[in-house]
Length: 408
Image (cartoon, rainbow, N blue to C red; front, side):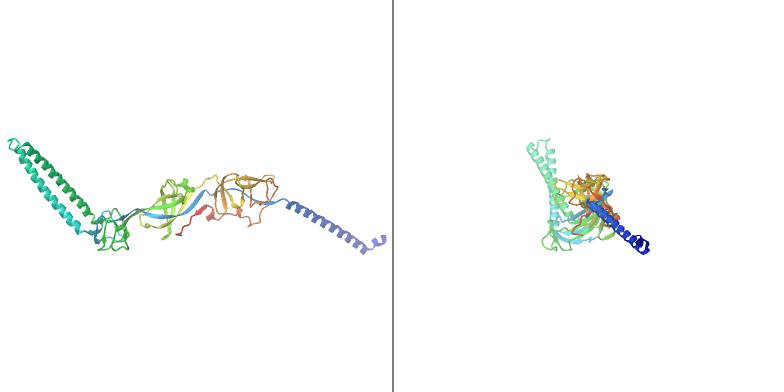
């Protein structure tokens, strides 16, 4: 043995063998320990967490709207006749009382002349009755006529006076109808419709001979456009913001690069049961006449939000039969389920009013296998996989709701 150890080569081989065996033993022990640690670690479920965040200080909702003139009056004929001439065409600016058209009505002219002649005749009869009464009264002192005949003359004078009054009223009636031969503008504005031509026969029921079919049609439409009315249907959930001082931003397709400020005027004190919306009216100054009646508008409403409302990713919700819950990780890394009061469900996020606080750790995308009191291990997802922690783009930092319409 001593001879073997004295040989250098043999001694080196023995040392290397011992080292190799020791190294293999160490490696296997280290792998076993690592496997044991991994097994124990994998036995505890891993979760990623998120936190409740306050919602944006303002909320914006985009809605369709309709723009109408401040006043818009369809003008109809009050008497039948033929269009003698029209003087204002589409887009004409008119002042109150400006003549829009004239109607020819020969029959009415003749009846008016007859009514004036009847008035003249009746006045002559009244004058005769008045003269006769004065004569009878003059003869009363000499008792040349009886009291009965005087009473008859007095009654005759009153009767003729009443007939004169009736004839005057008849003339005034025809005079009022004669004024309807002239169609005038009811107020300052713009002519937005002209449905008549020279020679058309029209009547007070809205019939125009040149119109298609027997549909009722107005002669003109005049719109006062110095200020416009904007009507929108606001969802009932935004009812609390509909109050004086509210403003809206409106755009129209024909002026894509221009924004108009609309001021709140009034809202219907009721909700449409079919659409669950509230008819709301705004006003827009339109001194330059850029806006036209009947325009479609895209309206954005911005209002402050409740600072007590928090939001979490929709993936953090746990739906139970009784309520909606979230899984919260306690300080000792155990799972506890807490119910929350959901107020609004948006794209990818949920807003709630009570249930958890901003400091509590909420499990994002919890597994269905998690139970109350389970021990968990919190991990941090790899960059790019935790969508709940990514910074929202500037355009998405506000809560935005859009209600499309067929016009879009």
